[in-house]
Length: 484
Ligand code: B12
Ligand code: SF4
Image 1 (cartoon, rainbow, N blue to C red):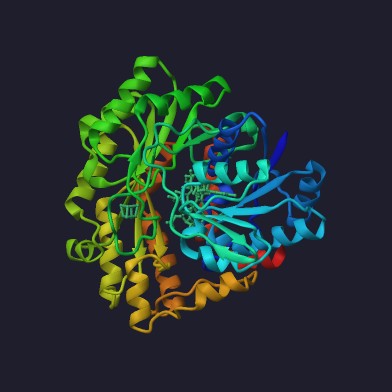
Image 2 (cartoon, rainbow, N blue to C red):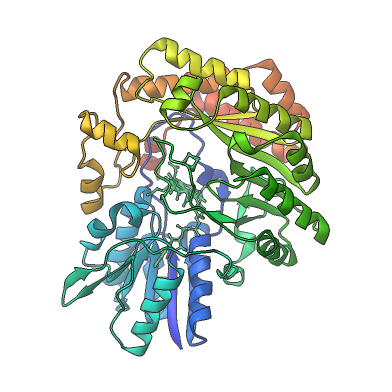
């Protein structure tokens, strides 16, 4: 047997802005590490000799040292760790603890972080193998080579060292998703995962597509071609969860409703199989209409989250969102008519947000679109996005800030913000103001009360309200971390 341990590392030092009352989804939810579950299934598929364990330190509440002890007890032949750029400090800490605990197995790293900083990450000699992109095929090949004692192959996206020198480049990309196996659901304990945002506490997460064909200027979603899975295959995965008693689903696609027809076909398949499930998805406003929503709701859809981002058609054109405010209003109306809940996302601090009037307009538009929930965030330009390049060119962002963080991560790193017209502090003040003004409206209170199904839900809503709106509820991340 060749034992591979895949680690979802502790998340104790996530890079984020110190925003008052910010609700981190990670705090009110715990989701299965699906990237690792896909990898695990691909490894098992590659050879029956591969035995895989997934160690989810977030769900198990393990710190880096406890993780290292656990891994040591498992005595693996190969260890893999997943990373976001925003969690890289914890990833490196975990890697160091593994070595300190005497874990000698080769260490591989992958995850969304590697798209942005593959070579920089591999400059930490502690990592033996790096994967940029879809891990299934290339990591299985690397694992096979290690198991059989042959050289690691040269494949796009597979970074490794030959005679101490880093080799490999490019991005690993699966051509289609239909050959990808359903992730290894049996390797996780579904009772550890929950979300207070779903219909029930126990949730399953599914990715029915990868990539996105759009090119919004602020977004650094890995620009890989958009690929979808067949709806039958996605519903097969749902059925696997249903057999384990999980009936509520989050679709983690960047773009679920690429076309209305796809949502209709998916809904029909759920209805055809008679599954009593509930689900929510994230998508675009231009592929929503009443008919599609009615079918989706019939099949269990309860919430739709859409990115609108900016206040005016001119602004939306500037960020290349390819939608209009009229479409956003119509989509929210259609979602509401169908009986589902809607959530909109908005961004403060685009380079064309230059005056107080622009900020007022953003809030006015959000209120006019009037979704059940609005999420505001401050523009964080990440390498890989067009706005990041523009900010660097104009001298608005230090081009080395993120790179230096990756080369020498520090625990309380504050993400660099493009302060083109507003300082970080001013943006944070606008952020708080927008949340207060959006949610302190009688119609929002009434809607929320009418939509509250249980005492537990009411309690959660009151708690969130207190965090935002009462002086003693205001706690930023750094405050929480200082206490930790
Ligand atoms: C779902 C999701 C979440 C979930 C996480 C659920 C979970 N348990 O994983 C939640 C909502 C909690 C979340 C939180 C955050 N997220 Co998020 N999230 C996503 C999202 C939409 C999908 C991720 C996913 O499941 N992809 C599908 C799987 C199949 O892909 P994958 O995980 O990348 O895995 C594949 C490869 O990367 C590789 N791989 C992965 N791990 C490993 C390990 C090894 C050893 C190998 C070899 C390969 C490998 O193989 C896998 C299979 O092909 C992505 C967007 C995206 N398109 O990736 C953003 C994304 C990952 N999130 C992002 C961010 C910034 C965050 C936050 C930091 C936001 C914030 N400021 O709060 C927080 C983290 C907070 C916290 N406390 O942890 C960024 C990361 C950017 C970066 N470079 O770090 C992304 C890319 C979105 C974006 N464009 O900004 N997120
Ligand atoms: S913001 Fe959404 S639609 Fe735009 S590129 Fe990113 S994932 Fe695609």
